[in-house]
Image (cartoon, rainbow, N blue to C red):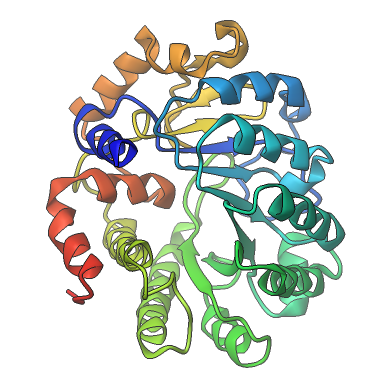
Length: 363
């Protein structure tokens, strides 16, 4: 009970410690998606990755409130030490879930990862999100890996069959490459390929990628239509969401619905809605040890190597404090879904809807 109270106090009052971290364990990737934010032409992109030993030291200093870590890339399974990196987080923190964002191209590595870690840490959740952009030929063309669609579906069903503490979903990112076909692949994933858990994202300006303006309205229209269908299909049971029989599952489903609505409403005309918790409850660790408040904001807080791998010392240092003040005073806003998850969970205006959902009342 004490842990729950201290976590709630941190989320709603002090906001001193991160609740969730996205760790880019590598920028190496076997795909070359047109909308990727990584600059693969820059030779510095692939240098100076944190070693497992460095990550082990960092994970001992992430504070008492951390609940979730997202290991991503690049392609996270491009790092052969990914099992050891995940072990660092499971052993050295109290996280309840590990989220893996992957293109699904390496099912053998994914199977080994699951077999090892679900046995060693049977009380933790491992959640995979695999990306599909189109039908097999289109998907392989967009991401430039032959046979990728087949391997991604193999990885998805492999996780689904594995155990109760492993979950998987397929994420469709609506972009200029697929806005015309995304509704059709949505139906095919359910009806032909047996997908039971789907999420929908929308491509955004980031890094070296800029959305072609002539496509932006069409992207928005497709995204809006798909999230409407997704929420209806979850309500009818055609798709699964989080467990509606549990309080946590109902909260997460409602939180996701709110995120969809906010991103939809902000995509064409960005505007401030509520405070952003990036840099306080949520943050990014880059592959080279640089910590940032989010993926969007180009305001690095420092490099963990310069802080003797002490995350909280960096998180509470002057640069981080000044950045949080800047975010608050400038009403910083965007459509970054990961940050919005924690903005919703920690902001008073969203609490009535979350409480009603927790009680089983759809609002």
